[in-house]
Length: 415
Image 1 (cartoon, one colour):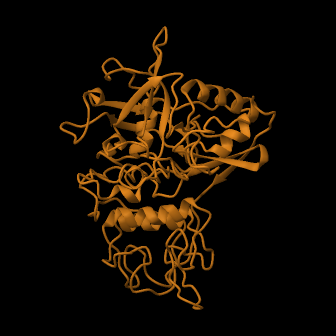
Image 2 (tube, rainbow, N blue to C red):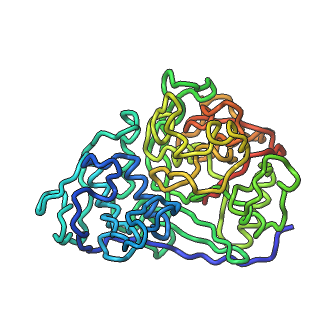
């Protein structure tokens, strides 16, 4: 039975601001490999700092940024142009995206990319167009990923009235009973190719045909819905007593059917006065890809050697006897700032099951039959998958009866 609750919404809005340059450094702090270039994986680390409340300077902390040793005073991260702010804001992130787009950066003063110690940066200065090699990621995986993520200033269609968002860079936090937060990320509208590409490795015929879809902007959960969030609204624990379940409030709510998810959404909407829903299948894939065109949002990864940094799947979960969904947000996010879109827990979508995309909508809406069928779609793959990391691909899809539930099967909010 859902609890009687009132939700509180808090908007976190980032805008461009004038900033000052960092302290002198021969190699930029974001340049982990020391090759005078910013690769996609290095950019994602800075995005991770941006998405969190800040970064740490102590050795052994979870974000891995530990410049100081022992009692030594921590050095500033070179992305942190506001001295001692210990946080990466949007304008600082834009500078690193600029380096990524150029494929490199300069350490000399007065150079065009602006990484020049003690040289002020003018207000509104942003990234430049261009492409660079991405170490450890197959060619094409970063194509289009940054475009649309930081372009534009001002209102975005569908954003909350009176709020200012830069596309892809606006977040909101809704507080549930007990102060349990739900974080949402604005996903900017755009077009993409949905489905598997020709001869895609470890793919299936029900991911055909690949086809263009245009998606309006929408809100998407930054993380999979957690046990703490479910319990705050519903007051129940449907995963209780099952095997392969992590007893941690910050791990995904699982053993929830599609019907259970609908009950939660009804209660959540009553609780908050907002309109939450499951994403459509096309919205889900668009948000997962975040502008990429490869098998995974970190590249094609034909040998499955890169994905451990981005997701919980067969290789770092099931195969090491951790056959459960893990705490959300521990892996690197995609370029929309969403965590665990691949692996960890399968995620319900609104759509009815269809064995291919022939005749499906191309406008981002859910594909709903009349009358409705008994099976629904889910996406993303899970940590409990036995020897099937390929199901975690961006195009991977599956289905189950609306009353079906299981380990590593949950959902993510949209609205």
